[in-house]
Image (cartoon, rainbow, N blue to C red):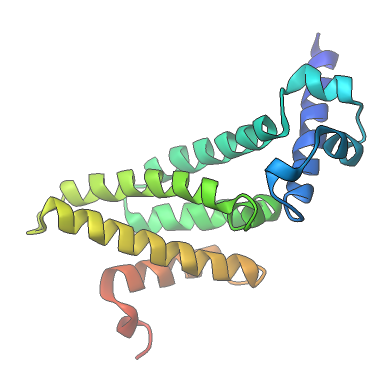
Length: 184
């Protein structure tokens, strides 16, 4: 039984890696099972014993990533820690990082990450004393998430050479104190 589990795990890993490679080239809707099987070096019967479609493969990859992000962020007490955790997750898996910001699949993932980050931001703002209306909290959350996402995208596209803690501190400082706080 143990050997079967290892084979299944290895097969799914081959399929996932093949999907991550192919998604760089084209949208998931244009990736055929045959193409994915060829890239993963498996046959179609093996593919269909695990998945119904190529979209299901991407959905599984997304769900795994987002579950990790969600769990990691909520273990953080302060926003800077949450951003650091996210940076470390991105840096530890470059293929996944490129998927998050890819033009072929990134929008779907980013929308889901936005929901997770917004929930986190709103819980933090609702737990703090402030004079913001609910609409202002939503706008502030959206503003910081979108700016943070843009900064993270640049970091990923530039090869993630900067330390995740430094990137997180930079993003947090801008989010909390504005861009003038880092340009002085």
